[in-house]
Image (cartoon, rainbow, N blue to C red):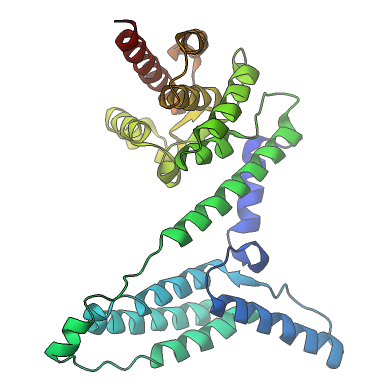
Length: 325
């Protein structure tokens, strides 16, 4: 039987060096073109030249793919910063080239990308703008990365949910593991309180009297999925308990699935203006969780559980007091 850490390390090793093309969200036509050319190239080698496939062609080396995204962002930034951006993009292309030269076995798509970005960089020819042309560029649309960020977050949540399903499959016999905690968190971020409430309520009822369960990290990569209160609470905890003083990495600051589910459940009920009876039931759930999450029973990397439960309880009490007056 594998441990949770072994499963995590296994997944990390499989995913840390390769970006699989078919798992990427829609980013731009260049990426699609490179993937298509790589697949066609492999087809020619296999069918026409009767050569066996030697590597997975619809994939990119992670570091090189990051370089590509960086360069493309530099190239499409607004024109009034063009000189600086052109110099930055040239440096970025050189770093990409250097990384490629140090790559032991680049993928076909990596090589095609290198050629593509060199061509893209040379397509931009800077000319000093006259005053009239400078005025005409002030209304140009600035780079909007919100859609890309949303797609990347959605893809991350899907992969995290798959990881939870693997955890439940491997370790469900020794621990209670719900698989929809990240889905609920993402629904809350999108403002879909009904969906978040449905998932969180199910998770609370499953985990309420359970001692052993997974936890959700609140720092640093997951901050963008959390709301301001949890982010602030995480920061205060890191100030009060500096990781270097207790021998822990900041990555191990987390809360249990139950605590997160209770927080999301409460927030959604407050936003949806649930009845006093419903809120009182949730308050009972929080008090049960507090008794089960006493400090002397929690590992040191879960210092956020009690403060988060206290914060959730306080939010409920303030709201109940206001409507009872």
